[in-house]
Length: 275
Ligand SMILES: C[S@@+](CC[C@H](N)C(=O)[O-])C[C@H]1O[C@@H](n2cnc3c(N)ncnc32)[C@H](O)[C@@H]1O
Image (cartoon, rainbow, N blue to C red; front, top):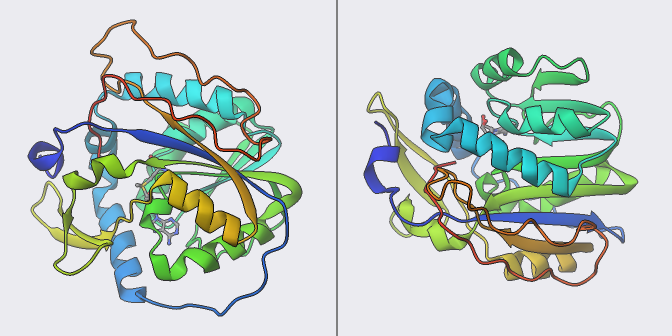
């Protein structure tokens, strides 16, 4: 069944990153690269939309429980923008804690599924390419799950500059992504550290960006760009193989306030997913 059945039986780890902007980022050069690849990435997710929940999350009920727990800790409050919302699994959790959620994704098929899933009155979906999207206003919180690893290195600075314009003065950026520990599940194109090849259930082959960044390196990079960040690791069992055995809740509620990295929490009993 597509990629899930092939190389994804190793350990899986999730990193929760929370970021707050503190000083303006000096303007840099615009970087444009890999437009074809980025378009191909959208095409891949359009085609994958119907199988996404199964191949990405497996046991959706278990995933939801975890996502709700993480959302409760991160507390994405106020007017929230969710970038690359996919099928709306995270959107649903955001809607429960935010005043309002604007959720965007470039794949209309993803948005269709998300709209069917999340009918809360405080949520608005929009099909939009994040790189060219014109925001109607700034947001108190900008959130994205499993998106940053799809941003190529050549777009990293541009993307974080864009975020600065999207988030309100005292706002926050919150994100969740995969830890480099699970990099081995991907098949990298020869000679590339960020372009991978994947196959869908229908046999079609796709190339997309998957750039695993070590949390410490991300933190240092963001610091260079004028962001203060706290990064913590959250390990959990997506499949609940351990029944009621859950790791301790994320310890510090004010994840966004400290200038120091949060301690790394070791994962326990992790099951693979493919984002
Ligand atoms: C790994 S999925 C993550 C989905 C969702 N956040 C989740 O965690 O379940 C990446 C998502 O990014 C979307 N995407 C890809 N390129 C995009 C772009 N340029 N602008 C907006 N969304 C994009 C895809 O359609 C896909 O839904």
